[in-house]
Length: 446
Ligand code: PFF
Image (tube, rainbow, N blue to C red; front, top):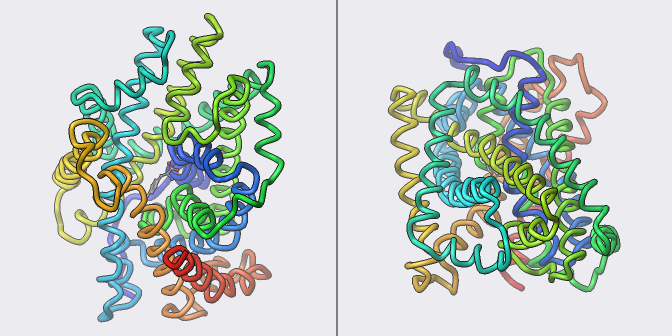
């Protein structure tokens, strides 16, 4: 192995978990998960999602963490260090390109939350909230401005570096976010009629399940845990040697799941209380909740401010992790300065994001296979590129790295979780790759 370069590290175990959970918990949990649950059969989707998390996503998480910490490098460099002279590093290019595609449309939705936070503060949600959302996303300038603001915030935090920026930011905001969402759930359950939403979240209707729903659940598991793009790998490379990968993985996945379920329980009961269809789609959080908040008087105004503030924080802690992957690559592989890498990448992804943003308005006529830019990017990344990246990482750890190295990293040199190793290694070597491939193929065929 090449000697590791001197690079920054997270200061403590708590900081690692907070930063990883900060990356994992984001729009995927609060905006995407509730509407996918609504579109794909409620509790039945949640069950498939849980299986995908445990059987596919968690092993891939471990694989990324093992590669990252073992190599102490960005995803491209990690392959160069751990598999010198092989073509693996070119495959790792997927993990440089995918994050940029993700960030481009992620920043657009991040911009929507900036806008909705501002609208909440100005008490602008009265009357036709669906119309407000429709007019907002189909306009040209307003979403572009908020997309720009969101991207600028993301770049600003990444510019500050790992310790001062990411670590400090996530350590304060994640516990705050948790408290806010719990408060919203409790509030929601007091609304008459909301228990139908709880029922929808816990009573499965298996007739809704098909290959596409399973692929969507798998994609959501990867999206939600930030997998297959090198984010967890890069963050794990900032972990100190005495930290344990299993603890970090299980804690991050549990927090992530908790937030997704909490977001579901914040959104669905409110949807049912208002008699709105759960299949509403991507606008669910942005249209339905303001409608409900607007009918709650002054309390609704406060809940609305808190809710969109939570979304904004969650989105930022995730977007910084996406940008960090590319920045780490440019700094370590190309020798660019942190400032130059951050600015160039932020600008390039911002430009792609402009296309995504305009695809709801002036560019709504530009379609490929019936999908606009935003939907193409979202579908391509979460349902294909992220699981594909996960497949590569699990194959790398399961088949390319030596079992002794993997065991050493997983068990902290034979001192921790030794009993768990064989089971996880089996999942990594066989179950995760085969599972991902089967979902790919069935999704293509049916
Ligand atoms: N996991 C984030 C979310 O649920 O919002 C999204 C995400 C972050 C995806 C980082 C990919 C990534 F690399």
